[in-house]
Image 1 (cartoon, rainbow, N blue to C red):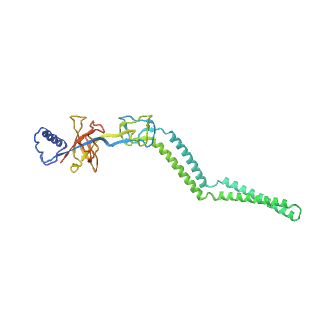
Image 2: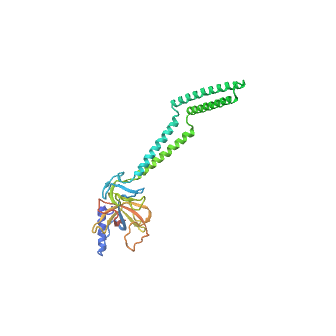
Image 3: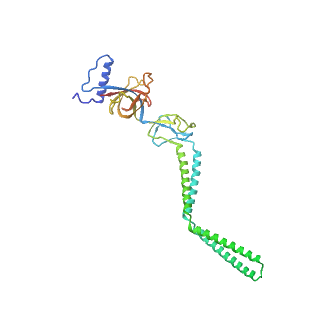
Length: 338
């Protein structure tokens, strides 16, 4: 075998473990031919695939239903809880009724008067015109009698008033008929359109509130923890979530790489993970992502000598297989760097 060829994962881990063991025993480790290894040590936290999702309701209220328990498998879009929403449903019913009324008013304005309405207006105009002609003829007759001094002037004045009233009634029905034939004005239709838009917005707002009262799983995964139960009150955007959901098909470790080591970290490097919770066990993994932005430390060990405000670079390590490491566990990471 060519000693300069890269080592496989099992051989590399074996060589690294052998070298570390020799150093621990006070013996100088023989150099691995063709490979110059160093180790990046870091702390990290176990997380699910795609990170943990914290489910916090968008509105406040009493939990009417909680449909999940810890450990349950859930699908993306699955209803997992519902907040009491009877008031929202009543508001939605009222908003829908108002929208129907506004839409009917707009349709009436756009379609104009019915044929029956126009026919009735024509008949009313003909009646008013006939009454006007009768009143005018009576006025003229009485004025002639007054000129011949056959009746009193007051009688003629009364006939003139009746004729004027009949003309006014005829003018009014003429105007009503003209309005029916002309249809609705543009500004009336525009106002009706605006009223429909407002009613539509009110309905959509009521529907949105009802939808916010129904809480769905954002991903496929498992319920890692449920913090609230039926009957309890949730507060919108509260720090106390309803539940935490994660995809456990794979597990990852988010490691905090010290700024002194960021020049040596690379994607594809082999990592070994250990934890005090699992003594004498090691878990293999591989660096799959290296962040491009420095940030604050995520994994706090409790060591007073550890700098809490030190800047770190995150490296995401994919663990092999299905290790029994729970989400949120703090682990120690050793990354083989060349």
